[in-house]
Amino acid sequence: MKLIKFEIVTPEKIILKEMIQSLTVPTKEGVITVLPKHIPLIGILVPGVAHIKKEDDTLEIFSVSSGFIEVLRDKIVILADTAERADEIDADRAEEARAKAEEAKQRAENESDVDFAAIQANLEKELARVKAAQKWRNLKR
Image (cartoon, rainbow, N blue to C red; front, side, top):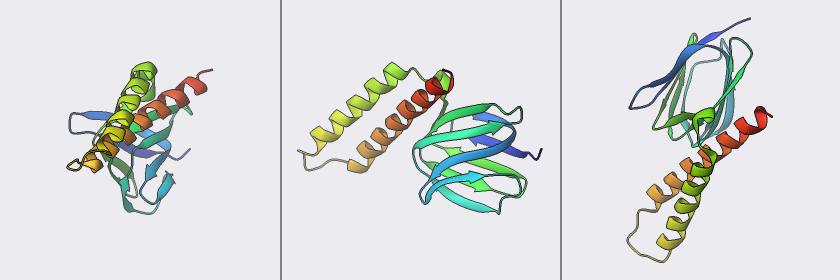
């Protein structure tokens, strides 16, 4: 079985660092899957759900926000603003945060001097957290 080194790094800490079989992650160009010996690339991450197939064939699911992915011949690095393991996300709290972000977006549409990009980014991040928690819950059933 071929493996590749993998790291998820946020400004606060290294979230995961280990050998994996594959990674599926959302990018600006669409969802990509990276396997060992993938061609080198650099991509822009968008908020969403990342799937990691680990060395022992288990699947780990993460919520990732914006950032970058770098794929080298022998290593994958994700530099994300935030990343959370799906099994650590409180689904109810994530849904509440998503609803609050949606309300903030709707309120901002009635105002003139608002940073819509920041509001939209927060909404997308919270939606990714909800999706990751739901996928994890479905996987464990």
